[in-house]
Amino acid sequence: MINYYKYLPVSKEDENWGLCVLNTGCTHIEASGSYPGKAHPAHHNFNWNTGRVLNEYQVIYITRGKGLFESDSCKRIEVKAGSVIVLFPGERHRYKPDEKTGWDEYWIGFKGEVMDNLINKSFFKPEAPCLSIGFNESIFGLFNNIIEKTQQEDTGYQPQISGAVLHLLGSFHAVSRQNAVSDGREVLINEARLLFRSNITADFSPEQAASQLGVGYSWFRKAFKSHTGLSPGQYYIQLKIDRAKELLNDPSIPIKQIAYDLRFESYFYFSKLFKEKTGIAPTDYRKRAQGDL
Figure 1 (cartoon, helix red, strand yellow):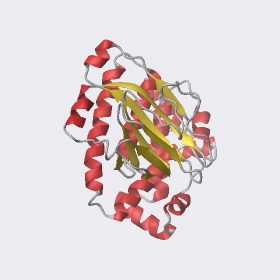
Figure 2 (cartoon, one colour; figure 1 turned 90 degrees about the vertical axis):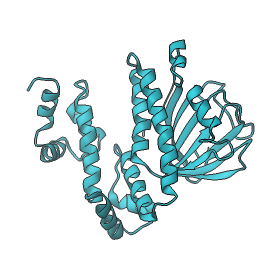
Figure 3 (spheres, helix red, strand yellow; figure 1 turned 180 degrees about the vertical axis):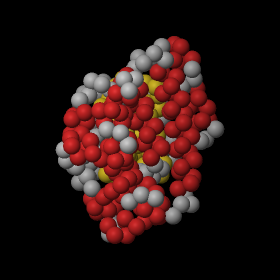
């Protein structure tokens, strides 16, 4: 996970869309790490003692670790991985990761009458700002997609990412209700999926995933394959291959660099595995993507 944040310019046209994104980012906080980072603008920075009041909405997805949250309308509660924190304008709040675990967070700040209406209709409430979402691949993908769009800032990107935020809000509402009736095994498998996605560029293994989830590897492998049709190892490799395809579309990134960044043991192993999974070598895949084949 690469730490990233960006505060976005917003035009009157963007505001007239009904929902506009103001900022977004992701942060990896190690155990005992300083929080929050000092590089953010003064109006967004805060400390635990004083808290903070924003003039916008924010949604924060905690994908690893745990911590604390409290606000004017919500007494202090523990926030666990798989939770979404919703921040409301004008509401003093504070939150922080546990010193023993740290946490990984993805966040988006936004404003607009679309969200105002959802609040007025009580879909989201300041008294219940923490939603139990669990480890949901679709939601994780939406956060990543929004972050990627803000990095590129292509023409017309604001309505695109604003639409994705509305999709996120709908997903939060639906998934939190579904999780109330889902079994523990499904929640654990979804957590494992997110662990693999979060560690796609790390030296990580299915055995480590089982250990972090607190279950035996033999049981984990059987349960994971039963739910997904793939063993944990094959699922993790497929994620890496899919990510490699995306990176191969960018001719400025050397193929050896892709193999290294995705933690394949060598370029030759990556090339061999890629061809096994796709039927085509990475070099030919890139040529085809560029229209040279």
